[in-house]
Length: 161
Ligand code: PNS
Image 1 (cartoon, protein in one colour):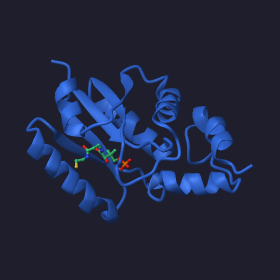
Image 2: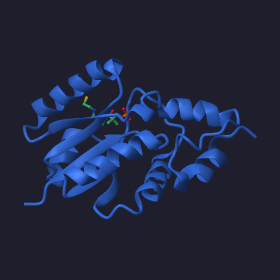
Image 3: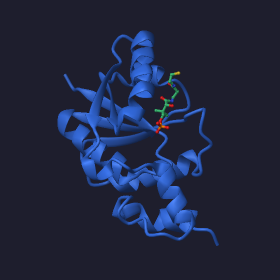
Image 4: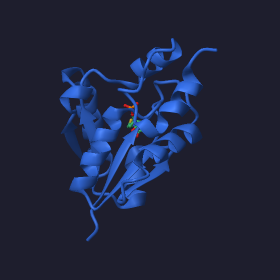
């Protein structure tokens, strides 16, 4: 039986931290679906189509990774896709309370929705999409923070004119 995991997130934009989690998830599962989704508490800087396009560029060389988008409950997508797990990266204690709550609520809504947490690699511990956006906006160098395949597009889109 094929074991599929879903890596959900806003990916606004995809960072090296996200990419690291996706690569590691792809080694643990037969198939990984990177799900570009919506966080109702955040106003994204990139459209859903742009975010999907950037994630596709970032993961193009990983054979067992697909990219999809979903404007609904993650729990419903888990049922629709037949996935057995949700994979999330955990950066620090500050992430834990929110992610723990999400894991429990998703499991409550859909029994098959097991959340697997991967510890963020030490070099990405400080990294977030919001910081990348700030640095790029002011013309800073974001090459250490986003996958090389998306660097130019992210810079061009975010740097203030
Ligand atoms: O990258 P983010 O912003 O931490 O991702 C959060 C995301 C998109 C994974 C989360 O907000 C989500 O799952 N949104 C879909 C709606 C949903 O199922 N919400 C959780 C139950 S209330």
